Length: 194
Length: 293
Image (cartoon, rainbow over all chains, first blue to last red; front, side, top):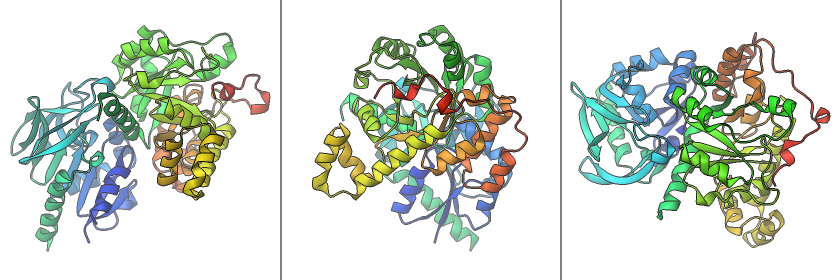
């Protein structure tokens, strides 16, 4: 059975785990180093506050082992704050977290909570619902990173290798398109290990 | 979905993003930066922390919008601010400066002893305090998109927050156990709309995120509230009234993430310096939790 780890140091991790369980995928929480003792086939970085997650990743000594796993090709899905954790650059010069995706992001790009919104937009050739909550967007895509979706001329989803990043929250909608793309990467990764 | 309902759903979802986090009271941009660096998931901007409000006495009001703005500029995390219970004009002002969350709070002097703010008239989200399920569901019916226990602010005494969290959860379990045809009477007893009681019956939880607040002073307090079912904690006076705010703030953040890990909690609780002095519930003249039911 697939084993997908969900970073559970802060934020909306329970929502991601609920989706994975609905899809029949084995999910587990990552709160501390010993949670990484078992096998892991994929990683989800959920929504929440990226500054909090970044600090806890380093304080709880999760940063280096997770970065190593991503560098070695572990499939990862980052939503909202999770996308900020993956980005190589953050507008305004703030230091990146994992920095494993060749994208630049702008945090709180739509302003404060009054700027939060929902819409439908094309993603991988399909119209899907998207919910943006104090969301970031992507201002630059470089190297082998590619754009997956744009809304109002702003990049809101991208991928690079097995890394997938969305500025919105697929875990808050019933549509599973984004999760299926991530899980396809997970099954490819499992095949490549065998 | 109407525009109003859509905004309400987005507001409840912002609270979901705060889960597993610590919201800290701050009075200056400098404190706000310290809180953010220590791992706060949001800050509450106010002129005086509850312990000082309690000490100063007198009428306590919404903070100066200029002061709140300076905190909004200092941090990237959400900024909350308090308005008085029932003071919809203060709430309108906070909405005008695009606050991320309004706390209609018993910590300030109530402006209305009968009515709370009709929160359905606002686009910005509201968090409200509650001592029991009836209060929580009434605030939700009025449009609150997040609930917190009232606890007893500014005391450093956890007993009331514990009482309020246990009470709410006991009442939720009771509603789950009822037959469907008994829910009407339950709604009447609680003084809340039937459809909210039905939602609790079906889901076994509040329809919105529920944090602990009022009296959290140590990592152990935070872990206690999380184990009792809180989805995150507010820390008011507990941090900036203590000996080493930076260290204590970071320790409480970690305690909320790993609230079940007693070994880590032992480490986090060590060498934190002085906790806020605190006052026992029998020693206080003013019970803020009795404001606004």
